[in-house]
Image 1: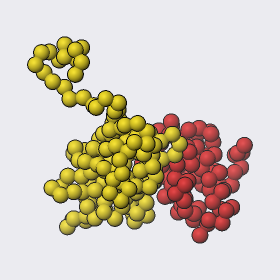
Image 2: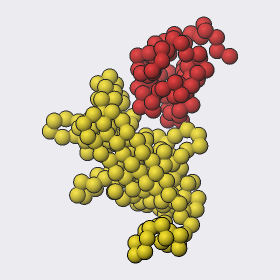
Image 3: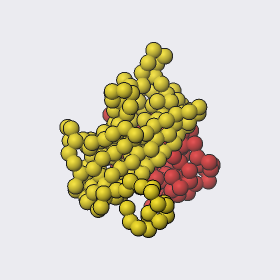
Length: 90
Length: 165
């Protein structure tokens, strides 16, 4: 289970605050809260994806371009961890 | 047309229905043009190349640069197509759903790759697309005719046949 000290969480939250255009304060979200149910549109999830790529110097491969990859803070952190650990980081 | 439909419509009126055994799906999506404008301003080419095909970008380029409302309409068309495809998990790659401009200025939706595979699984035999933009919004409707799963016809280059609405 992701704890609040996950190394990516703060940067992911800031990216969401800057690009997800959620109608709720990102700081109030729990890590497992569904971002789409919290008001993130599909188009804004693309903005988030592109911003995360820039923030973490990664590139999400086609197979990860799924709603589930971006559905929660926890899911995003896990995806970033997978990419950085798998050596996909440029 | 059955007797009940004839009764409801009144004598002398006809309704055009789907062939027996066929089904249909409709997808609708709308987006503020400003959302696409801001994404282009923020992410530039990375956004454009991730979402749109070369043909789509070329179709939206004019003397004044990119027609953002037209791009927004194409985004809406892709979203409407996803609603028609109803993927159980995940979603098709954005560029596997391509709005093709055809002679006369009309457009049609062409599928390839993951989107075409989803259409095949759903038995989608044809698609119709209509797009619009007015003021701050762009929207699109996609209509799909379905037969039995796996009954989709093969289109040119493995794509599903589509028509403009």
